[in-house]
Length: 529
Ligand SMILES: NC(=O)C1=CN([C@@H]2O[C@H](COP(=O)(O)OP(=O)(O)OC[C@H]3O[C@@H](n4cnc5c(N)ncnc54)[C@H](O)[C@@H]3O)[C@@H](O)[C@H]2O)C=CC1
Ligand SMILES: O=C(O)C(=O)COP(=O)(O)O
View 1 (cartoon, helix red, strand yellow):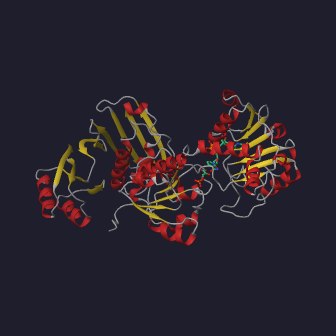
View 2 (cartoon, rainbow, N blue to C red):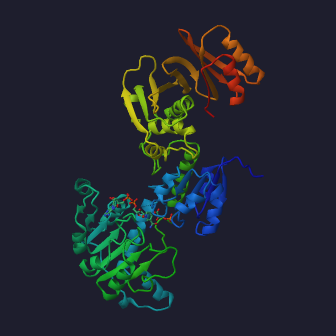
View 3 (spheres, protein in one colour):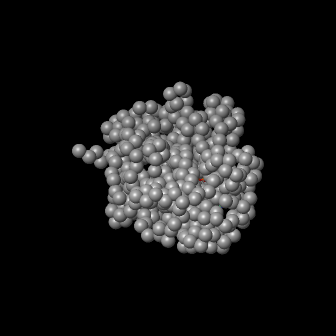
């Protein structure tokens, strides 16, 4: 029997079996062929999470078809098949598995380079055809040669470390890497032009971006050292395929190893059937180890994302890494924001998150996102997530700031969220996370002290103080079948605020008459869920 209340995880490409174990029974797993557009658009409607590799194009059309999608997880590195801005606009988190397959990809680049240098596939083929043609295959040695790495990121560095064992000189082109870092790795940083002129072999390890697409075309190949070997195990389209095929045919390029193509999947390419070019069908990440890691890494991220928690591998969430000390405050601060949205349901003009005490020593850049999720909970119809909260704030003209104070007289750490409305009205709510059990507590609302667990449903009544109000409210709630779990009153002069934690949500048809019967100025209900 299908349990429809479990989140639906839609797997759109072949992933390692480990992904299912890592996802566990808490989710319903469905499968679709991500390259079958119609099937994908249909299946994604009910998905809470979508898992892909490189073959599924996740663009605005896909996001438009979703109803409750929270996360797109790319079980691998490159995100050129996922339209991240469209995901952000829809409040959908995008995660990848940035280190899962980097060793496999680097090893594949080494394998391609050696296969080209020693013409292994072509020689293999002759023997398959029962021909012994030793004299046809004369390779080149790597020892003493100059190898150029284009893109000295994670995979580029792993490739460089491995190929260094062959006794080569290493140079690299990467305008975003410091010369000091390169020197640490024993690599000389040079311009692309110089790399082309000096390299006997070049391996490309760039992401595909508007800047890198077509980086190497006919002009660049013409500038390269005659007989250079070129390897591309990064992305199709970084090198012009026609130009590369021509350059190999003419002998300007000595050979090429290519794992990735501008259109995939493909069975046609100018790079096929050219002597000297070795091709593989995007196999860089296709090892047992890389696939296991990619599967388990994204499964962990999906579980966190579905639980509404912060995900370290998310690529479209501001705020950076979240420390152990900060993590328990994320749900609390969202709740403080939810109280503010109950006190003043319209979007404020500014939100300030004030962090006091021990927590102020931590990186708390993520806390405003949590606050905004709560503050906007009644303002916008669409889901408010860590992903789209900053964009919503910008769209609604809400300024956001964080203030830190080391002093906190009454609590180890205290967070206050303050919202100023367009008419200048200010509301503030403070909370803390208390004890080893990490109990989330509301400790101050608009300057009045309380001490109440921030959970379930909380009712707030502001009324002229007089005897018997508590009794009346309790009786009327009781008649409506609502049980009071905790109650506190704060009095100042003739004024009082009553805060009640009750055992179920209370709708306005019940609440408004209760407020009227005690002459309450305001009656609010906050559901923490
Ligand atoms: N064949 C396969 O199966 C696999 C392919 N890949 C591809 O490899 C790419 C690189 O992966 P990582 O090394 O993990 O990424 P990374 O982000 O660690 O490194 C990319 C490097 O490229 C550099 N870069 C960016 N724009 C540049 C430009 N215009 N000119 C020169 N350098 C530039 C960056 O500064 C960075 O150092 C991925 O984006 C993916 O497309 C990744 C895994 C497997
Ligand atoms: O991780 C990457 O960027 C890759 O290119 C691997 O792609 P794949 O997951 O094998 O479709």
